Length: 84
Image (cartoon, rainbow, N blue to C red; front, side):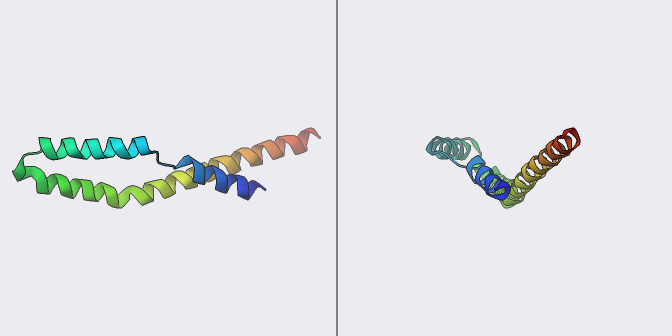
C-alpha cells in the first residue's frame, strides 16, 4: 500500500500543464529576439547543458521525496510502537 502511495505521489507531482508549455514557448521566443547573433551559439550551448541535467534533477527530487516519506513513516511507526 505504501509503495502504491509513493508511486502515485511521484507521478502526480511532476505534471506539466498547457500553461507551462505556453510560458516556455514565450520565454524562448523572447530569448531569440533579445540575444545578439554573435552570442546565440553561447546561449544555445548553455540551454543545452541545462537540458541535459534536467532528468538528473527530477530523479534526485523523486529520491528525496521517497526518502522523506519513508523517514516520516519510520518515525511515526516507532512512536506508535513505543506508545502501544
